[in-house]
Image (cartoon, rainbow, N blue to C red; front, side, top):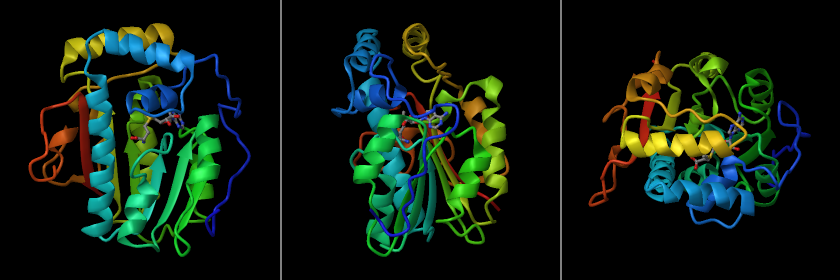
Length: 273
Ligand code: SAM
């Protein structure tokens, strides 16, 4: 376990039960990414979405690649050394702490997720470099009070922090005020902090996304909300969007020669002035 790591008891809306009979978004996403941390119920949902013809495996890879590029940019070019990554997901290639601590081993990362299986993997795998720290909070991101309180034991809120919300906000329905959630977190970080956010798009390859939404509505216990560019732009209110703005994920500062075919994910990075 990394120096400074704490693993609080599961709390919040999800009391930490691992139910392998109910599909969960972290494990469905893991299957689409080619991972092995999923169960038959998760694979069934994932395969039904693939069967709609939606190129969802490309979408999730584009999302994951954006996460890596954004964290690398923030650490290597913007000089950020603290990351609050909400909606951790199951460990995959180039997790936030690995990307940031490759740039600077002193980088400090706090993750938060509400899936019990993410908690199990976080305990085993999300270890930081000896000098940095990687901490995991098992909580619902809507419980901002708990997350902000616990994050303070690892992060210095008097210094800039990058708030990372990659592929998370579609799990927060409109009635739970997702823009308010982002605004609450951003109100706690100092000027010069950043928001890196991506969210599945309702308006890129919209027909395929609508078909996917229908499958998810039918089979997933938690409501999934895809959003248009205008709706996602609201999350960045109060920040200055970095170039190239809010764009399909593959177009956010792509590596030279990378495939930039649009995928159904909006992505951007904003700076708190
Ligand atoms: N951020 C990772 C990425 O971009 O590769 C993982 C994205 S995955 C699609 C969404 C993650 O958000 C899952 O791990 C899921 O458990 C987590 N999540 C969804 N709703 C949540 C909530 N209300 N509170 C905390 N975590 C949540």
